[in-house]
Length: 72
Image (cartoon, rainbow, N blue to C red; front, side, top):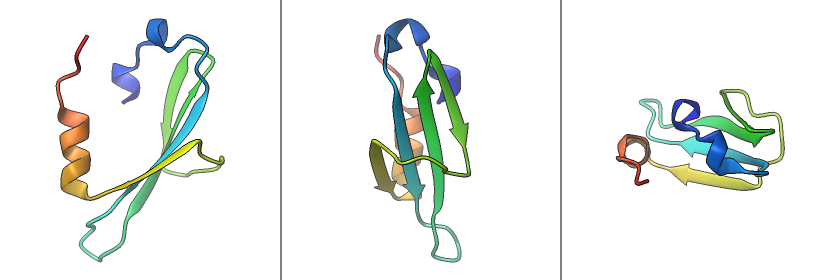
């Protein structure tokens, strides 16, 4: 996601998004934190902030989201 981030379209957006991606082989999930702040987008596998939005998705659905062709 940071690779596709368009700072020119983000404007003054500041947001923290937590992605909880399920369907691990052990039945668990992985949580990632996406931070959009000061014209940058950073991803971490160690959430430390309170999210503005929290999404829980199955692994296959997450792959559909991140591999979709963006519209311009």
